[in-house]
Image (tube, rainbow, N blue to C red; front, side, top):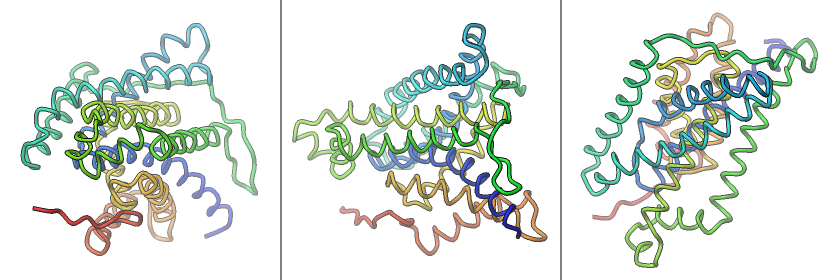
Length: 303
């Protein structure tokens, strides 16, 4: 493997790993607080991409199809899809909160199918172009061309993840989230509004997934109703690798998974069609040999 290929795959891995990490954060936050594997999260990512495309189409008339339009689409999509996450939690998950784990897991699958089916019905299964004027200007490192778009997307993802980590670790609501994740009943006795904390968790996780959806749509130039399926599975894998329930672990897992996918598919005699094999092979290995992930903790469940 040449140095140029190493640099190119590093860039590719960081880009896709940033998207994985943004979605994995939502998985980890929701699981950390209410121990739910929210399988609708990939479809929330897809919803964010579509909302972003709609907003981008409207505002592009006034502000153009450059960064200003993308930023407007990003902000509105994060707000709208964050609220969608709150609505899903309120009407689908909250009534099932004390039900057996299997019941709420099936509810999550149902919510995923509702979102996916709605998108299919509204779009007719077509691919939609997310055409921007971001261009291909950038920097040349050796023989590798790195666009400013790639640099900005990675920087924006890191900024969002750092902001999330600061919120969870330094604010009162972040402390409330951590308290609820440890003991929901005791948190309620201490005066914490558990329902509000859980709703806030869903809002933030969904907003981050929507941000990832808009950035992926703008980067790849296309959105479609099925884009959340495989992305959601890979983000779940990233959350497991980092340690599901751990916010730093989700970031680390996403970036590592992106790099594994990029470098694995560039090995001699191995093509890009093998990248999913590397991803889900890693998932199996971690579940077998280190189910707590890199930064997760073992929890003893009391009965």
